[in-house]
Image: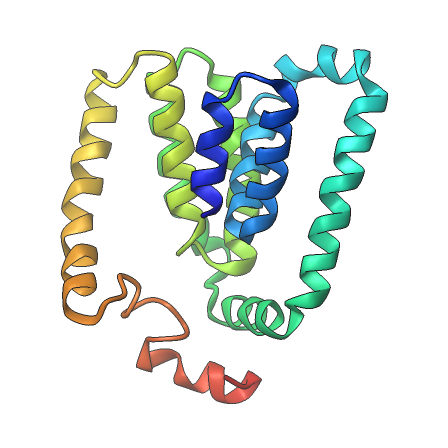
Amino acid sequence: MSILLLLAALVVNLPWQRAALVVLGVNAHSQGAMLFGAWLCGHLPRLTPFLRQNRRLVTIGAAVALGLAGALLVASWDVIGIKLKVYWTISRGPAEAIDFLVLTAIGLLAARDRLRVVLTQLPLMLLAVMLGNSRMTIIGFFLLIEQMVEEKRTGHPVVILLMAFASYKSIDFIASISATGNGFWDTNPYFAPSYGPCLDRFGR
């Protein structure tokens, strides 16, 4: 739902509609907030003049978004808190950054706006080190491909290799959905038997 709301924000015309959909999308799921936050970081140099000229509007929008996020966090802490503890426990630390180093290297080779690549992937890399890269990597991949489409660089050899690799990796994911109804059966702490001790420690 979060991704659908953020995609809808790209196609509406009125600014207030776009703002409303972005706020709803960011608050619909924590991954939506991470995706939009990384996207903002990547566009920060371009957005700086707008932020300076519209400080009041930006402040109000940020206050509304943070207020909603805070309320949802408090209301859902029983679930979110357990997830954060589990992901923190199973994180391999700096090793979780490898995927983002690869994505950044591909972006630096293929992109026209290399600074955007670094600013987008860096915050996700830091989150991955703390919480693991199982959810972060797909966000980084999505944002890199979005930039390549925007810059018309999808024909670059390293981008083609990245998309081919992602297609290959999706085979097991789709097979897992077909067999179990959940693509993360082997990696999601709520389904994978190997993470049982983490759940027993923090509660299911």
